[in-house]
Image 1 (cartoon, rainbow, N blue to C red):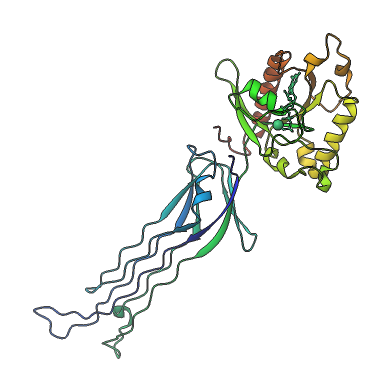
Image 2 (cartoon, rainbow, N blue to C red):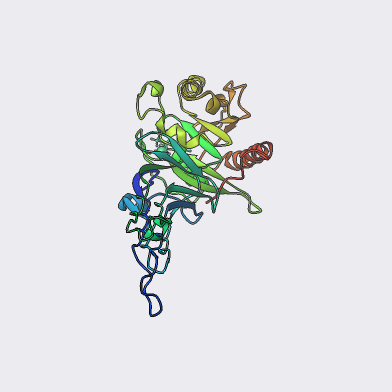
Length: 340
Ligand SMILES: Nc1nc2c(ncn2[C@@H]2O[C@H](COP(=O)(O)OP(=O)(O)OP(=O)(O)O)[C@@H](O)[C@H]2O)c(=O)[nH]1
Ligand SMILES: [Mg+2]
């Protein structure tokens, strides 16, 4: 199962209470106030850990509490602070406050940290209330409550390349053909209900991350089919591939429809560099009629078959070059993305 969105509750630890105490020892019969301050409560902190690639762990545990601060003690001793609770999340996790909708932050790179619920301050002990005219104060404060918050963690897949096509276009088959991913493939529409990711390896340790998402259909921007919600998974890709099956009645119309749906979703996404893949070329025989598709905005139209392997190597090499180019032009902007 691919989990990419969970809601959890996080609780900062309450601070420890201040102490009420008076100095008493063998040499002092009536000492002054000596109650120390309570310890600070622990905070809940998210930390990006590249060992993780899903938010699955959080499906099964909803409440996460940091340790409370310890109470202050006599002899002016401050209570021990509560331990922070560190929750590991995969890089690429975006955090929003579930109740206000406010964006709390994002953890993009290994080691990034974000405090999501602060621990409370410790209360003052009675020693802090002493004044020249109030020399034996009995007051002390309770610890402050820790922050409590309901947050949503959302993992945006960071893929370099996204596959866009109608249902049955052969997206999942292509992902399986070029990576170790084993998405479900079947000859009925909407086989893929959740995005799949795979790492596509080329020679010399070169690679890129490929995302296969559910199919989109005409009217998806109005909610038809599965709608366009899955496009968010390819918002950060470097390049896209539009899949048009070789046996489509009107390949150009398929391409135009896909482009139109993407534009309706986001001009930025539609503006990404892209190529067109004429898929299932093995169904065509020798003729290349479909390759005549007119796509002046695309960086290429490549005829491929996941069954015969035709065109696959060319597409991989060409795509890798495009991804590299994009990474280079981004340099100085976004940091290098995490790679699984
Ligand atoms: N002949 C041939 N059939 C293919 C090729 N690629 C995919 N198919 C077939 O096309 C059908 C759909 O393939 P999928 O990979 O599931 O298509 P998809 O685009 O992922 O479909 P959805 O997940 O429903 O959006 C399956 O029956 C595949 O076996 C190909 O290169 N040649
Ligand atoms: Mg599929």
